[in-house]
Length: 150
Image (cartoon, rainbow, N blue to C red; front, side):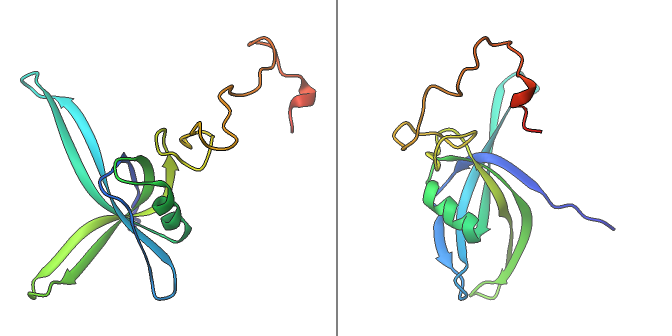
């Protein structure tokens, strides 16, 4: 039987990322994300639910999350569920689900690595340009065939 394990989360970090390295020097970062859901109850009252998720990333992804994110910053991440189980010091069995991050995107307010879609452009960053893309003249002017690269 085929399986599919994919998680997409958009939320805020609940704590600063904690970077460590494996014995073979692979970066590992652990952090938490909180996601919120709002809905209207049957009685018409507004309700809100918060879900707290533990996350882990490896390699270059881990280093970038550690460098650019801190508690409270928004993040959009893609990953897979991983089941961790272990025996505690008192001999009891422990387990939990965690998201292993495979990809992430900067959101406005993260102070990411520079301008660009979803990069959290920061006016204090070198190369920041408030003017947006260069104007082509009139808004509905057709693009000449010579400007199309294919």
